[in-house]
Image (cartoon, rainbow, N blue to C red; front, side):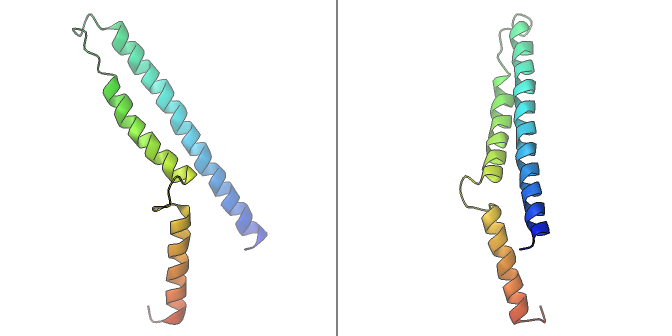
Length: 98
């Protein structure tokens, strides 16, 4: 691997982590705003607490994003992708017709 390739991989990794952190901050800010809105209007909406549903839904998405970025588990992660690319390249070198 050349220095340029290493640099590009490192840059891509930093961008992935940065994207996750931005997602996490938006999750916190948006869900705090929804909770405040819901809790300050409890009397108007008959005491219904609804902010928990977007919190749970978005929380699941955030966990999936964390798994994809930080590689918690090997299923379809960065390593899996690299192995599949190498396997495809090897296959093409063995049979150039494909």
